[in-house]
Image (cartoon, rainbow, N blue to C red; front, side, top):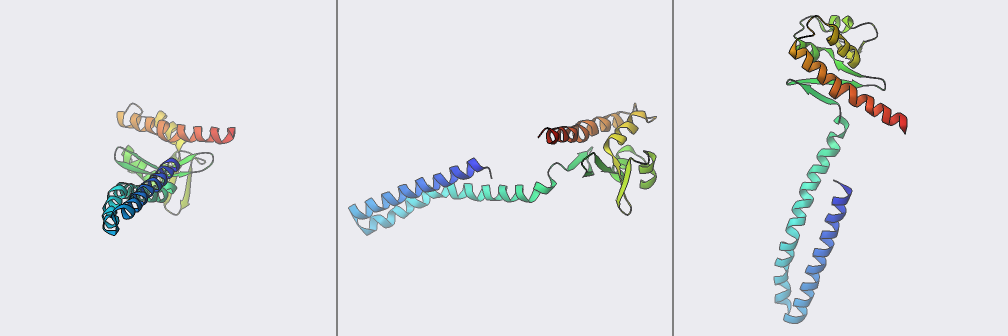
Length: 175
């Protein structure tokens, strides 16, 4: 929930409750207890909308807080979800989904090692990752570099994975 929205919601509650209490006090004083009870209907009408806004803001806030650890780390291309690990110097893409996108049927380890000795890592046994820039370079020099699917994937890697990571590093270095 944005700070401004929360403050606005609280102020709305305070003003509306103040109006209702003022009206109820005047009604009680002028017309007696029966009019004071009828003013409770006004309280319901005036507070219904802020209560609904509070409920929806709470749901959005819970969703934002629960999904925040995943923000910026979920990538998908052509319907294939890409698992990405971020390190200070690069982003690493899981080799298996990359192979699925490229139509490569070789074992995951062989594909990862094909990119070079410093261009792959295995953080968990059997889970091979390739460095983002190494994959982009591989796609540039592969024999099927003119393939539309590979070019689309290469552009995706550059635009959505490599460039944002570089910008974030530059911003952190500039602080």
